[in-house]
Length: 94
Image (tube, rainbow, N blue to C red):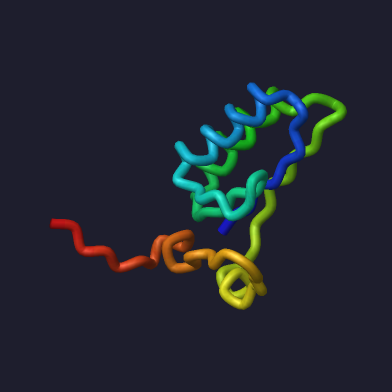
């Protein structure tokens, strides 16, 4: 389970980072925070794609947390679908 958080001043770069996260199957949990499961290669590919979009005055963090810690994370306001983010949703598609 990974979180990517960013403060990016350039609108184009910020949008590109959000698009990269979505393409990796991550879910937006706040305006500038994405969460999702990735393997090591996907994580490295995402990080290598994001780094050039981050200026010296900006900040971006990519970190992992264990599933247990994620499941007990406190959230107020709009709910986060933790099962969906973990890829444990049991959706039947017809």
